Length: 406
Image 1 (cartoon, helix red, strand yellow):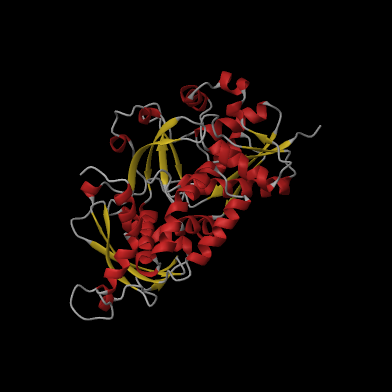
Image 2 (cartoon, helix red, strand yellow):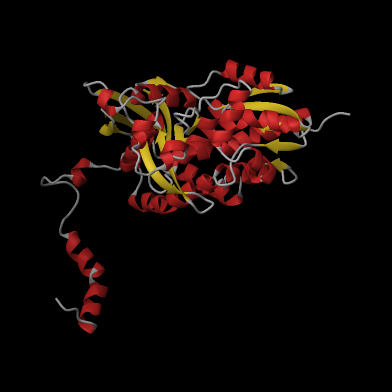
């Protein structure tokens, strides 16, 4: 009798390593899919071999690195979207793409379900499920952390670590450093373990994979020039780069200068607060450069409209609402809005700091003879008299009818 097939979104980490064995015990034929998002610290060959050693029927890699940068990260960058004004959404951006790749693999092998290891407390369960159901409304999703029998067997990471030790399954998490990490070419996130105590200094706990500490960064300032076309970064120091090349090379440059670390307490979609430590050196540099390019090339009203909508886009990405009509419309809007955002921005990196060191654009709206504090130019300061009299009219009326104490 043939077994039902399932596709597991497999990272080779603690949760998914345990899940391979648990799913087999439940009678499933497990097909592991490692979605290659440019994870900088992972040995793909060893991860695939581990899946086979544990008993997976197949272990495949789906390389979506370029798609992650070009079709997911860069549109979010154009929005300047940051969740709760800080988080650059590196994990959130990747989840809809992982779901899509797993559904494609499920179609290939004839799987009856898509399985993920996201917990019932976290955001990733939302991102995986909402994306999968949007793409395939008939999809069956198995989420073991939402199943009592799985939680009874493995109530926490301590029991899962014990299982892996018993079965000789190598995992990065340990009893001394039991935090969880998730990585791709955009960033690495760290949570759980000692980080669950908000009084603990998160930076001191983590073995960072993409950045050196600012204290250990070079004592010399380093400069780069990033070129944009319609809001998309396309050149680095004058050389054309693919989206993936742009991100990975800036990760190296900004990372060695200690740029891109944050430690925050955030509001999860499910309602609780959680503590996360993140490092995103390349994307931090791109956000800084992109915003600077907009300052020179976008007009005030369009920029302010984008700013008002940016927080909502960040929230949608964080919640997992990627494949929906609202997001489609918002992405069409930003593509149009970004057309003038072309030119070059010079950045300086120094001991954890990233600052703008110069702008240049043929689409610049900065006209020095208008803005100059020196005399002359085409701006007639006499015009401001009538402008302010008109703008102040309602205030004068209100002040005469309802006088304020002063």
